[in-house]
Image (tube, rainbow, N blue to C red; front, side, top):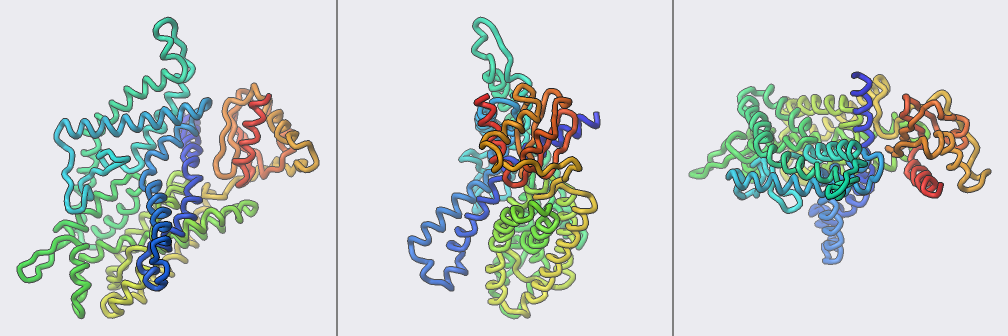
Length: 516
């Protein structure tokens, strides 16, 4: 049982990496969009306000943010394709269609039972619902996409070769898992309409506890705002505090202002008047910037020497995106599944940092990227914001995260980006330059027992992952004719460490298998 569970977790970890591989590229391009659309930057560089620059900036920023805001469907399609042992394209297409069915089933059910939320001044914000691909559904974050992706991969592998005779032959092959997933998607969309609101109400019930528990409640607030990011449920934690009287009230003459965010906006225009304690409910965004400097540097430092340069190329754009715009999801999902312990530690510290801001009396603005933070706090002044202490705490936080994460990664041998085990039987092998162009790939396939022995082929960031029929047919000497950093064998699961060039190796192997 333990081995089955471990194997399933390894397959899931491998699958979740597939869609994440593209986020570093998206993050790199996104930086340009951030620079061109940031009002604080364009105010200092007036020529960037010209229409052509603004058009380019909005195209880049809005289009790439569309990807980040729709990670659920990307996970669904990517995970299904990664889990499928054969016909990965069909598996991905079925996953996409299943996701469409799920969304519509959820929307139709909510409408039928009268639970579709009404648009307010802030749209659907804080209602527990959102619009996904133009369809109003329950806000389930990436949870729905991950669930459907895993389900599609399982059903596709189990029933993808099922054959029927006669009239029912139309359901044979890849069409049968699609038929099953039609039923499953409709059922899940219907069921989520009743089950997920219960989960949401459980999270919402915590708001009363948070409000009445002083610094303990503030700690829980900060912890949950980070811990629940992968599920999307964090919206239900901060929204009531941000925009309702749960987050406090401010009386200005005959006007009553409710919610931590509107109160802060009002108090920004009240010189000499300190911010209300409710302003610290806005400060959870402190944890979307400074910690990621330390986290990113820790990943780079702990990466294997041969992977370090490539890890830098992946991490620096994501770190810069976090620093400039506090967009952290691409970096979060790099380790939330690969090293969940680190994400739990990150969440626990996030709660403590929020309390520390209050204890140290640092009501400075923490929203947006570093440029926005500096400009808004400079405008309000040191006396009202205590911003120099904010920067000092930010620097200490980054350094603290760095040393803590480096210690945990090394101590627990966690599988963070660029970190791979080097097997003792790793071979330097004969270089491709000294052989015919296709010979190293051919020998690699022979080393895996030949084409007939290969069940499935995939890769993560640095490893070629192969499932074979018979592990006894593996020949390390042939595999090592291609330079690699190690071979890890666990029964029929073979992993060969090629570093960041592994996608090219996988492509070459697939091409060779097609020709054999």
